[in-house]
Length: 502
Image 1 (spheres, helix red, strand yellow):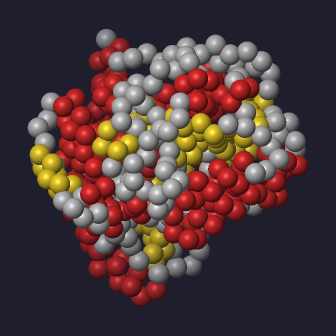
Image 2 (cartoon, one colour):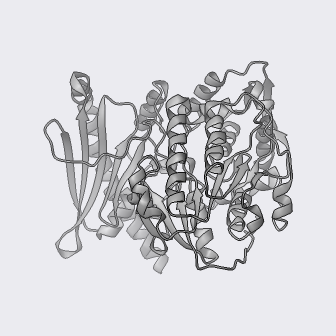
Image 3 (cartoon, one colour):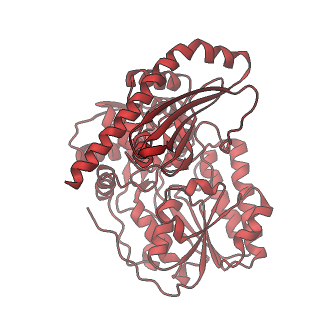
């Protein structure tokens, strides 16, 4: 695997603002900026979603929303350069207008603070083609930023190839799970995929490359290939034989629903992207190569090899499913409160283990490890959810043991974490109400720990009540077995730790 390039910078005293720090690109950009000596301020809508990032104590975090202009005032104070990495992923008229209004608000706040520059990462497109609403939004966002008074560097990037990036994960799951694929017309559009490493290098180096100010720069990898070629290239890297069957139709909606059923990616996430894959998205000028000669973009196969290396070594930094825009739009996580109508089922078990060990046991649930008890029933529930348009169980988890607030965990979203003490998951499967699953580890006397497992359900009307009471016998049986298995896994973890010490 290729080692990351070492980038030596100068003029490190400036405070840099990174908006969208919880996203796929932002979450990887921050540690690279820190590594080369910049002071970083992160703008996020919910600072709790940065819990678990190793660099959290090295940055300043301020809550703000680009759709709420007053919240931007303190965010820009004292900053000199800002990365604009904010956008939705659902497409549609309402989502486009939100994205454009967010850009307008950001520009106004930047001008009020006399910001020196905005760096924006957009999409590599053919502006003369018929753009999808999502790509039109990305294109117009760049235009809004450029037409403000603050100078802008805009990068237009090809498909990002990296562990956890949404289009790469689409290619990976389709190739891994299907021996033959019926390929619609958009599979044969040409693209110029680029390694996540190269994207980050462009973003970091641009801070110290004054010649990039005021420029719109197209960036892509060394390969110009079709999406069908990407599947076959991935298959060869994995030693798989795959048969592609071309068809003359496009059918983006049908493609999105099929991908929804056979991969962890929700149709609402992938549909706007598929709608933008009907034209050839290639670099038309090489200005980026002239301004950044030290960056020699990887070819597609090398990018895949590097991404697979991170996946196989469980070192995936960020993932597409960190985004909250999956099944419930821009809904902010709900804070639990004791109120009438909340149905609660709580189970507890005392274990002769330290609280930290118990915490490690229940924070390791989901993904390939499963849910420890009657895992087949969880899989069936996931498939039912998929059939009704939900996220299903296949989103898995970014890392087998490490977990962060805001991450997807199968069909749950991690809503709260208190180290060694608590984790709360919010349901994103289709249910007639709102549901949470919470685990606690409360230290007791003589080194014991009280393990508490609580299911909360806020039903929507009579359908919600019927759902709870009809399924209660099944849920009761599953949750009863699960708490016992969580405790048992804690004893296994303790045993393994002792063996490692010896």
